[in-house]
Length: 93
View 1 (cartoon, one colour):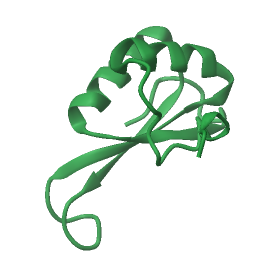
View 2: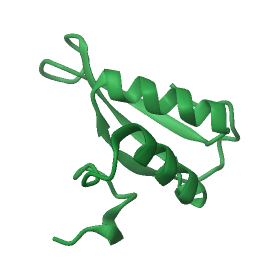
View 3: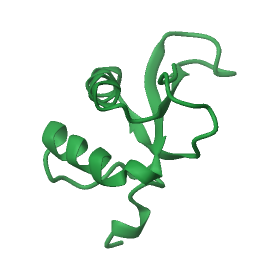
View 4: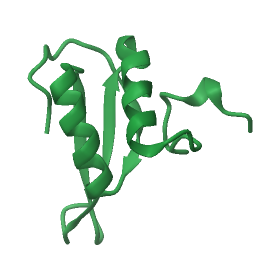
């Protein structure tokens, strides 16, 4: 799944989200015009067998303040997703 924004926008990994959380984020990113890529991850061996269990979401780093605001509104001020490269410089660990 991709946003309708130009394909040449460099994207960085925001994190891995449950389908429920991902749907909330992607809806808000679409409304805000934030470029994103969502890659479904499937249960089972080889990645193609089984149901989708989570999604890796990448976003335009140039829109970091907008992405952070949306993330905060949806999920609070909790720690960022540890699979994220997007928030890497904000970690305490």
